[in-house]
Length: 105
Image (cartoon, rainbow, N blue to C red; front, top):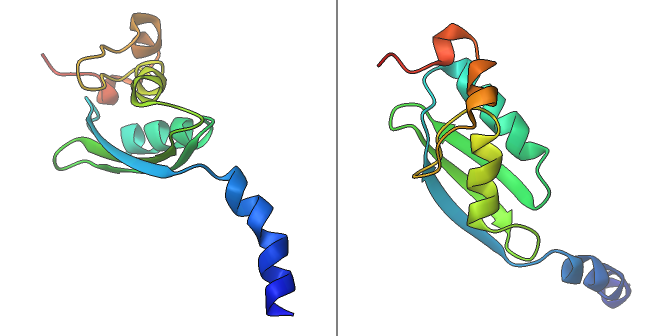
């Protein structure tokens, strides 16, 4: 029975590509930023999970390298209105953010 279950699970395991992890510096400020970025990444194909640490503004993303690369993850963050390492936030998306989520420069 165990062998049968294992054989049935093999195709599912093969579909999931190797998981990789990346840390990306963001311009997030508050809990709303954290929520917004993590929600957008959860909807991004290939992203398994993400966790933004607001103390250092670094998001740790676990992803399937067969479905998305680090550049794609940075792009998804920038399209949410936030900087992602050296990728600047998309201006029109940044403009949609609440004032509390915008840089205080």
